[in-house]
Amino acid sequence: MNKFKIGPFRATALVAGNMIGSGILVAPALLAPYGQMSLIGWILTTIGALALALIFSKLAIWIPNSGGPYTYVKHVFGDFVGFQMAWGYWISSWCGSVSLLVGTLEYISVFAPEFVSNTTYSMIFGLSMIWLFTYFNIRGLKETTFVGIIVFLIKVVPLVLIAAVGIFYADFSRVFTFEKCDWSSLGSMSTVLLWAFIGLESATIPSEEVENPQTTIPVATIAGVLLTATIYILGAIVITGVLPQAELIKSAAPYVDSASKICGRPGYLFMIITGIIGLAGSLNGWILIQGQVPYAAAKEGLFPAVFLKTNKNGVPRGVVIGSVLMSVMFIMTHQESLVKNLRLFIDIAVLAMLLPYFYSVIAYGYLAVVKRDELSRTEKFFMPIIGFIAFLYSFILIVGAGRELIYLCFLIFLLSVPFYCFIKKK
Image: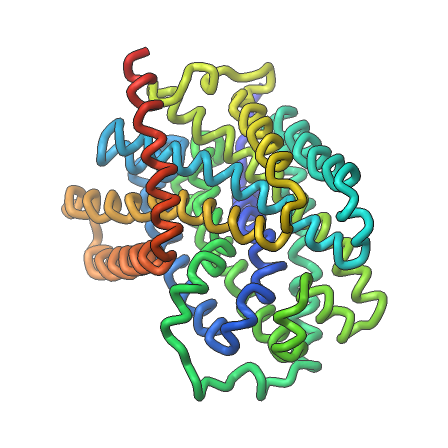
């Protein structure tokens, strides 16, 4: 019996599906105070994300093992830095997953505020979503990626429809007005913008489970980023043109409000239903990731042995451990303030992910020098340019995050040191 492998379409759906979540559905409202600068931010972020996608594609060819950023960094920098990257990525995966739940509840509150304000109902809903998609994951890779395709289509189709139909309703005089460009605002927007692209490396995480990985992973990664970026930019243009800035700032669900203005009540209900399914369904891919990264680290003795164990379907137990931690965090922070918690989880997830991204860029530069004799003339010309763009992009995002968030990120990685010592001693 042949072992199931992730094909090109499923890999692309995993990449795009993990990116398209609370970022796209909530970002227009979070970016509304920055006006037209948000469109510039989307374009610059797309360029940076595409550079990162090209880097991860090349790293996946050079180092074909599962684990994504953790594996690449560990290969170049050694055990300690590799462990810290796995630590940060793992924490980011379940913090980001909690933000998806918070974003889903924020969406539900648009048409059913009584449901969300009822702590019991919203708690049951959130925990049910976590364990529903955990169940799909523990069934095996084939079932997980099939669910991922269904969720991906449910998310993408309405977003494409809004972008296509909304062009005829948008007031473009509100969109392309750049007389007062406050370039300093790009730093403030950075975490929200990058959050919309977190997950671009998803196909590299289970690379040993991917069919023909040296071809499939680069194609899926680049195609996923380009597809996602197109949806983001067109959506940002249409929503800014359909909703006045004052309405957009107050909107809890910009796509829903835009659909309501364009198509009336049917559009409103359609976007509500697909938005809820899409947001909650994004948990599916991230739960897969949160099991694969510690599994890859545990295989090399850098995570506790419990993460190395698998069930009868070959699924790492880290899937269940991550879901338990996600459930605990969701319960502890539930209902304080949806918007406040959403932004907090986004910031933690992005910052914990930025260092693995940054170190992966450095690893790419190092390997490009080491393997220079293996590169074609075209690669020798373009690879330094791509590396410089990705380095500049990731470094500026870290600096632009602000002192408080950098301090929080420092504490997260500082906590990894005693765990590393304990694991090495074991």
